[in-house]
Image (cartoon, rainbow, N blue to C red; front, side):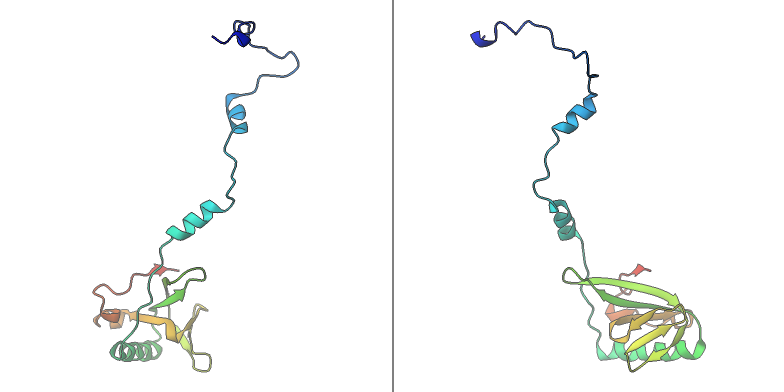
Length: 151
């Protein structure tokens, strides 16, 4: 053993008469790692977040959506409208759906107005489905229609 510590090696551990012994958890917290890279966890989480690619509709699908929109406006029945929302932070976005009767089309603004209050950019609409239209083929050549998130 090192000669420098021989005098103290067998001494009892000091216990303060003024301060209460600190709990192990509190003591361990003093030695927790310092977050030198503030925001690093957020960057990792953002990098791992998955976005979807925007579907490009062909002319046949656009014509089908126009027909479905006309039928939905005539029937005043609730429809499920799915559209693409561009992500503000990275490439891609997500598909969002709303179920409501169509209130009208604002051609000047290029928006589809829904009775629930939603305003949807017409250029971003990828699918319109109503119970009376359920026999039509799925959107953009996909077998099960677009992968959507409800809102």
